[in-house]
Image (cartoon, rainbow, N blue to C red; front, side):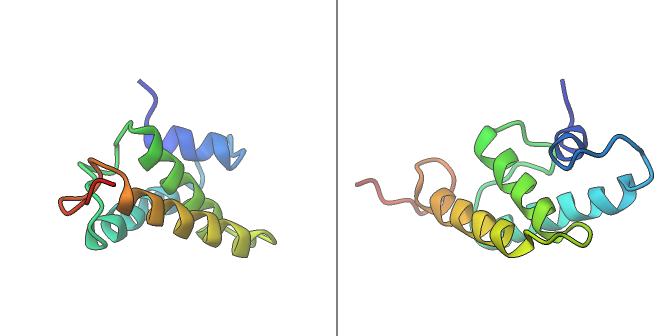
Length: 96
C-alpha cells in the first residue's frame, strides 16, 4: 500500500528523500487541521481518496516557493467545504 508521504511526493514531483521531514510535518498539520474543523480523519495515513486529495492540495499550497500557492489554497478550502457536507466525513452531517 502506498503511503500518504509517497502520494504527496508524487503529486509534488519529488523524487528525493531530502524533504520527507518537512512533508511529514505538513501532512500531520493538515490532518490535525481537518480534525479540528470537524472532518473525520482516522490518521494522517488515511487511504480515503477525498482525504488524500485534501492533503495533497494542502501540501501543494504550503510546500516551497509555489507560484500557484493561492490556487492550491483555494482548492484545499473547497475540498474542506465539500468534506464538511458529505455524509460520513463529519459527525454532524445533515442529509439533503
